[in-house]
Length: 211
Image 1 (tube, rainbow, N blue to C red):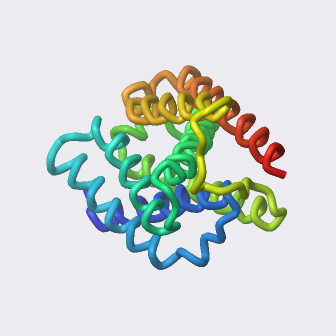
Image 2: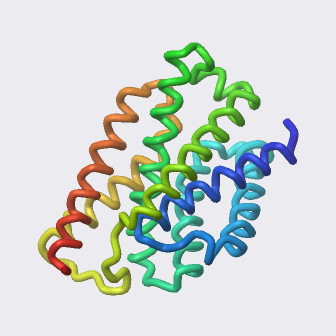
């Protein structure tokens, strides 16, 4: 295992995930690029230690999700719940994108789930393709002015907001264990898409109500 390559590709992937999260809520990633680059390096070192030095790979997704929330909370200076609202749909969307790309690559016989899990070159290829797709998509979305712009510091626990909270909890729970189900690509994809579409629908409703 080449530690430098692992960190480089993980940093690239981390920045792509942060870009997805921020773009969904109309934040300009360039304004936070230095901070998030440093945080991505930190997360990459943490991920390497968890996976290959401590042998705690199964716990890495959940702990990474918590780090994403903490970093967004610190960087954007929004409420902790607001940070969760930014992170979970972005994390789920990135997972949907990566799972979809893995499905396509597997259909084209360019790689398989097993090869990605066991072969670092296949993993790096998947990370690079997913990150590139995320950057290009987010650039287009940001240029078009799409995204949500309602306040992330005020959240009342009533009406549809309760359903949003439930979906966020489900998203965190599933994102924490989905690596254990990577061989079940159809199930993983369907679950992530259901959670994502439900959240986006409620977010759009909330945006309309705030206009």
